[in-house]
Length: 452
Image (cartoon, rainbow, N blue to C red):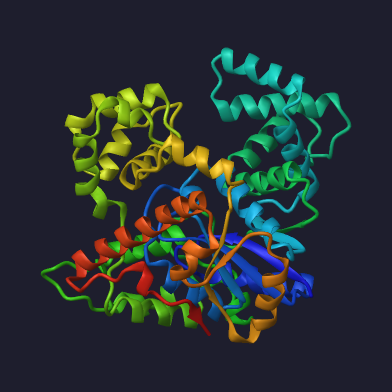
């Protein structure tokens, strides 16, 4: 039985994701595809636009066989922690043969070599990196320059260019693209875990990760599930927000006609689009701005010491947040106010989300002590994939949680603490939806696994 894993957010699910699933099935003849998916909050430090159960159903309808939740501690963390947790999850399943990921390049040997250097951090790399940082280079530029020097000094895979200047440009371009960065982190994690799982690289096609517009359909001659992606998740989110599909207490939730436009129909599989439109009949889309009041409250009620213990923060960032708290207007405004050359908007966003969810240094310490993934939380599966669940029950090295009521029996007290963070995040997200739509909130304990 060949089982392949994918680490994803599906925020929301679109043709690019369907393309990956279809191509992976063709390329590997996989019997089953398992997905480790972020829950209701994502790696950018923001809420997912629609909840994890709707996104799980989209994935299952489009070719995934099993969807497991990546704990919120890691789902809303740095690229390195996000990737390490995802790879660790599949490693602990004990039955996954390979991990598939997309990137802007298809040069796996080059990405692997870069990952090896960054994972090992040899003395010459650290020395060069320090030198270039002291010279005033930004971290990405210094890293690219240090890697270039190492590439020139050793017999390493060709970047496709001969001149040292072009090599630097090539490496800078690779290290500046989001999917390449995640691909390198996956490869680093595989190396550090001494994993036998095989990396499977698919080159990203069609719309770019940061594209904000939905493009025209580029090829109508092939099946939609294998079509060239015409929109990034960013572009789809922008469309949903711009068309004001988010509901308010003054306006009942109704699907916006723009969701049925040719542009969106060409960008999402029919099943995913149908799930989205059905979802919007009763639920609003969610943005970081919906948590602005709560964040403002947190900033006013936390002293400097409490803020300094939030996960992934530094003393400098803590001082900045504390000193700027009276200039707070909204989630996005405060991210913009506190970002800098050294600290990105996204990192500030993650830290502020940690403040909302009360993810602290101690939470990270606990997560590391539990080796990232102490349980497998099933979000959904296809009934035709029951054989996969049977294999997983015997191969997994950690408990599987399908019913939350059983968690206290299955998990250690320490693992339960980590699960409580997931439950709080889910319930807070659900409450935020309920306030916007003026419909009763649902406890995470009342939610059922998606079965197709």
